[in-house]
Length: 139
Image 1 (cartoon, rainbow, N blue to C red):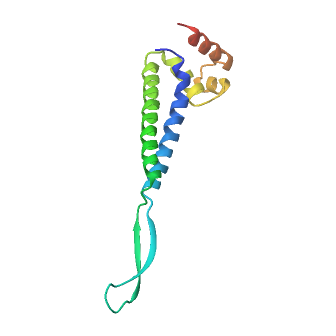
Image 2: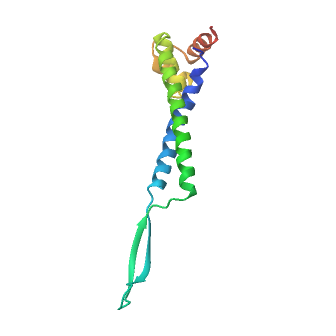
Image 3: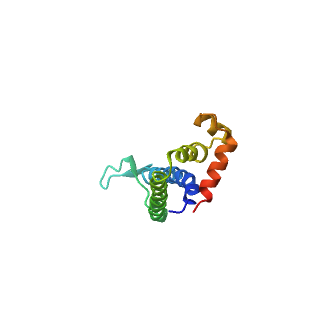
């Protein structure tokens, strides 16, 4: 597996969250109920005017577009989840020290010095940065 997929992990995680929020918005719009009141009377005498409450979900051309968009979003979410799984599987094949460095620096967004402090054992930010760069430069 190519190490460059590591940089796609953050975007894949963000994409999953954003896509799920868009899907929830579409589902809320599809479940939206429209209400109205109309006036009418009976067919026979006495023609008494009454108010009739009607409600339902609006089915328009936009509904078809929403369904198509939802299907596209589902595909996008599945692709992003696939990348997440690939990175997580790849992480199992690298040394644990490098897993920790990647977790702190790439996934959690710590600075090199913050990651070094979390690593402990008198490591420096510059030291783990060099270690990371050497690891990523290897074939």
